[in-house]
Every structure is written in structure tokens, then in C-alpha cells.
Amino acid sequence: MRLSGKIALVSGSTRGIGRSIAQMYAAEGAAVAVTGRNAERGAKVVSRITEAGGTAEFFPLDVTDESSVESVVGAVVARFGGLTTLVNNAAPTDMLLSTMKRLHDLSTDEWDGVVRGTLTGNVFFACKHALPHLMQAGGASIINISSAQSVLGLPGFSAYAAAKGGMNAITYSIAAEYAPDRVRCNTIIVGKVVSSAKEAGAAVAPGQLTRVGNPDDIAYAATWLAADESEFVTGSLVTVDGGVSIKAPGPDIPLA
Image (tube, rainbow, N blue to C red):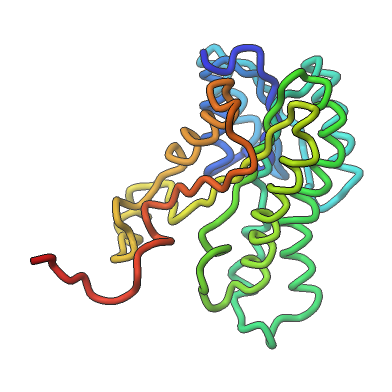
């Protein structure tokens, strides 16, 4: 029970990586606020957690709406008695395919939508309203979920890469500003992650040095960053990407 006594708010936790983090946190003893825009999926995650003996509750959340973020943070603190852990995982995934364009083809609204959902709402709004409570926790952790697209030049993802790169950069500022309050801030840079064997079969690519990742791979890292055993770690970009960000393109050349 590495997270016993922790109270965690995980944004975008009704599916994928966020769901795995919420479930693993609960299994490790944390009380978890499951959040997202889909109440049906959220109820299923909460049901799975509580059936396994964990503690969780669903809170509907739209990270692009500051009033929604402020309201949910307040509701979580009222329900569980505080907040020790914030995981900024939500992202406007429904917009990414429609905004896969070269930069000059992006509309201003498309750019703003991706940046607001990925950086402004998911990180700024969340941290702004959660930090006063995290500062009172006597030791807290903020964990941002970034992407390898923030460090790779992948065509078609200018807005998303910029937003995730901003997430990487603000990690340093938050870590420095709130160290006196014993609030740590770290970011996980995520590589190719798929949720099913069917997806994995189609996604295996030469870029992987290990294997295609699954949501639990990210949840393991997020659990460590939330636990007291990582209390010496802050202001770090933790890369969990199967080696994608360090593998040069081109054919594999066997060593002599």
C-alpha cells in the first residue's frame, strides 16, 4: 500500500492511461477522484475500483472550463478531506486527428483548442486551483503526462507538440516555485501506448527499442512519482517511451 493516506485527483481518468493510473493508485491505498466528461465510463472505473476494495468517486470535469476545474477541486477536497496528488493527464484527443495538418493550414481556433485543452486547462487551471490545497498537505506531488511528440519532430502535430513542450517547461518552474511548500512536480514523457492486443499488433514499429507500451507502464511510473519513495525527485522529465525518443531513423545495422 505505497499510497496509503494519499488523496489523488486524476484528470481524464475514464479510459486509457488515466484509468490505469486511477486504478493502480486505488490498489496502492489512495483515495481517488476519477474525472472526465463521460459519466458512464467514469462510473465503470469507480465500480471496478470499489469492487476491488479501493476508494474512488467520479467527478464530471471539463478541463477547458476554469469554473469546472475550480468546482471539482473544491468538491474533491470536501469529499476526501484534502488533496495530496494531482495527475494532469487529460488531453483533447478527439481533436488531434482533425488537427493533423501542417502549421500554415491550422486555423487559430484549432490551435487554441488543442493548446487550451492540453496546457492551459489541463495544467494551468488544475495547478492554479489545486496548489493551495497541495501546499497544506505537508508533502504533495504533481505529475504531468506529456508526450514524446514534445521532443520529436513529427509532422502534423505542431499545436500538440507545442502544448506538451510547454508542459515540460512549466514542470521546472512549478518545482522551483513550490519546493518551499514541499510540493514536487515531475512530468512523464510517454511514447507509443496502446490499450489492446489488437492495437498493439498494428502499432509495432521499428522505432520501438523494447516493445509497444500499455497504460500500466505509465501507471507504474506515476505511482512511483506519487509515492514517498520518490520524495527526492522533483523538476524531472521522466521518459517512459520504449526508447522511441532516442532511436535514430533508418535501417538497423548489426554490430560486428
